[in-house]
Length: 380
Image (cartoon, rainbow, N blue to C red; front, side):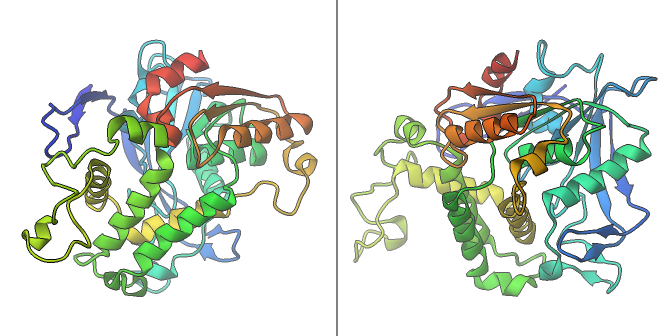
């Protein structure tokens, strides 16, 4: 076990320490044939970066696939450590957990920052639309290479939940159970928020139509996109409780001039409130760990996921053999709990063994990461 720390400048509080589980193995898998995408294009030389925890048993029937969220990585032990805690969903003594970095990401799998083998140049804005189903097909090839024909569980939250459900839909023989947390097809509000995030990046002059240099990325645009996203990941109740109308904790005065104004002239900006300081801090952290074009790619993957597009619920879900458990989050307004519940009931009406349970939390959509212990108690 290792520990990692996070802090926010000027809090005056010691940073929290979180234990995380190191992978048993971490590596790359390269598809030996091009991956035909739903959009009609093909990706050649596709690389999937993945990490495994535990060991595959002789029968190869103890595999669990964990699917990460939008800006996550294959290192599930770092961002979802409680799933390995005593009494958690997984145990290293009995399970073989594998997490595969999504296509489009910047954490090892093929994405906009990769080299297109056909041109010898970085994909950049020419990277194609990759669907959730495309990811599932690619991941299936990796599992095939490991001899895994059975998954006792596929689990994920947010866009990871989209992957978990698509696994149950498109590979029904392999999947025994699916755990889908905090997700349904994006509503108009969700699509609107993602649109604003794209606009923030694209209107940064440094984006350069997606052809930016690695040393000159669109930092301001990506930081603003992340701040918009943070609004949808949290709840108004949590923001009021934590930040309220307090001045920024670094000493700025919202009723006085901003630091940039040096105490002189106009009052158009002023000092920041605490919530503004929090959002700016989140943006600053994010630009140090993620790529703008990867962010755009995965947003489109999320936007375009809709299992019912062009078909009825019976046509979409009747082939599912797995038991599908949905989890809604009481304060989630990106994927409201009633929407998740209705989605579960739609599947049940189509003949799927589906159940719904609800996590009570003020943390909003992020609750499945922010209150992991509470989530695990709900699942027991």
